[in-house]
Image (cartoon, rainbow, N blue to C red; front, side, top):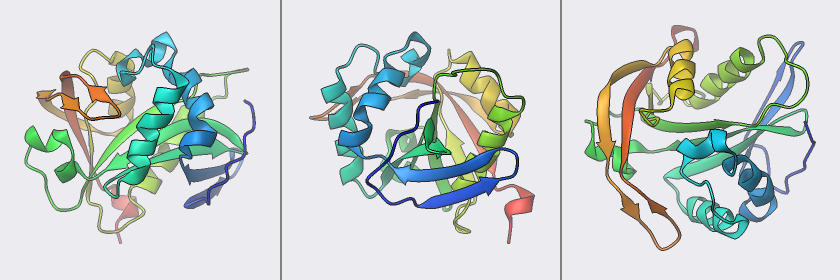
Length: 201
């Protein structure tokens, strides 16, 4: 894994024994666009909806996210190396709100893992995802996480199942047409994860 620095301030740091130190840092659109573009350009990332876009457009998309107060994107680094892009959003301010009844305390999430490099590390994904769950529920006001992966994304659905997300059926997310980015209509699976008991106050 290549190590990268960020000009932005970490919002969460967690050191895990025999794993390393994870840092959650708000995405810097200019500094991080090259890494993000390399990730979204891969075939495995086709469900992210950005295959074939330029690095400049990736930067513009995350500049749009950066301007918002309801949507947030974080680069997750392990000992300095980027390992995931993690996004959170307020469901009531997102197109998903047209597909289910949003509850107080809901938070929406999107996750993209970095392409794997080097030798496999047993338990890597499980440990990383555990930290992502703790990060998601770090605010005691958050009671439930909401995910809406593409219905054809078997790997994402399997990962959510291992985390404990419970699917609630299929939905069709309406298209979004913004000046910076167009998101087409998407057939998705709606899934929920209640706050884990061990994270309850």
